[in-house]
Image 1 (cartoon, rainbow, N blue to C red):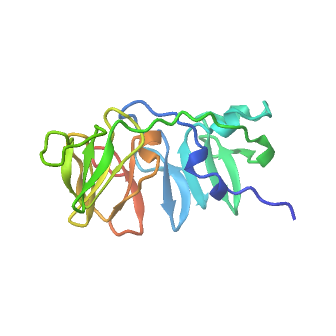
Image 2: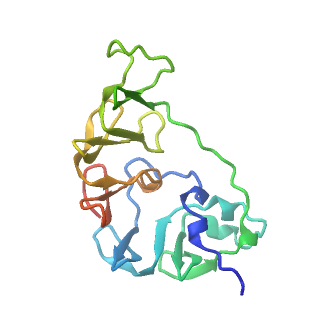
Length: 222
């Protein structure tokens, strides 16, 4: 039996590091109904019916952009999205047409453009804060961007100079910036640390730890 090429083997790490303009929300947003994914517009209307096990944002796939098969390189552009159904992965267009089925032989090598954030998480006495210095004087506050006070911090990929940071306080998840300003209130049971912020300027959140949806930096749900 010919082995199926599954999106589960692709994951977020196969996507390129292309990033949307600041505060720009995608035209189409993945949405699930009864554990099947389709795409809605910003008003919540389904544009592509839910039928997929996995649906990712419309964004570049650097493996296809660098494909040795020049005929499929076009499908690596951000005009297409990667989806999976019955353990088979496809690229679809914005009308929902399946325009390409993944083949291992088509995948090129991604040139890594990953750069770590200027800021990093610092642990002190069981609490977490944020620093931008290699050497930190823990006796005072001056070397900390955020003095350790959270149960967890995670710097999301995106703007290296002004990152968004997943934080946990009183067992609730929220988003803060490098100055400890609350961007998303601490009302969620979970916020995923995936690439949705970098790819789409959206955070993937859950109020019950089971059902997830997307919000923007103003806490508007999609």
